[in-house]
Image 1 (cartoon, rainbow, N blue to C red):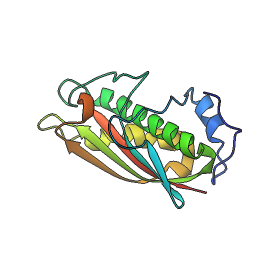
Image 2 (image 1 turned 180 degrees about the vertical axis):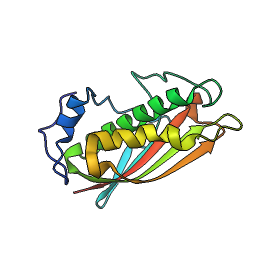
Image 3 (image 1 turned 90 degrees about the vertical axis):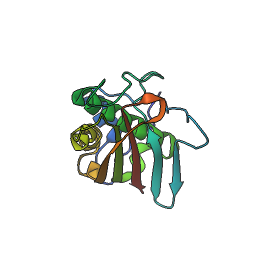
Image 4 (image 1 turned 90 degrees about the horizontal axis):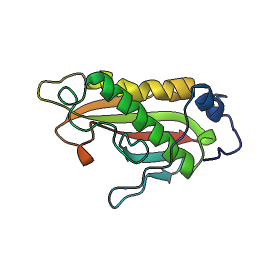
Length: 163
């Protein structure tokens, strides 16, 4: 995918350059699994549908965090979810328009007794901070759930403010 002309976000961060510095490439937008779209703009916000940690069209791991998937693997998967969310934003409006990641909700398919959801969802939070700097700091929920689509261990949804 060819990046659009680099534009600095509200905080002056050249998001495309920062992705390159971090060795990250925006993936293709993950096709919806049901009747929804990957992202919708309403006013000056983009609402990103739940993003699974798809890599090249596949889930690298399936199962529950704390059982089949280690917390460290879950954290890595949350990063992929966040990168997929950035791809959805980019495809809809371009990352250069991002003013702020406002809210992140992370869902972690959790084994019984697993209570490390916040640390797992840090994978997504840290990716937004690494890429967007201060613009990536956000409000957040990290929720343990019994199951996620396709057996995914993690899912992330995002609300971003845009210029």
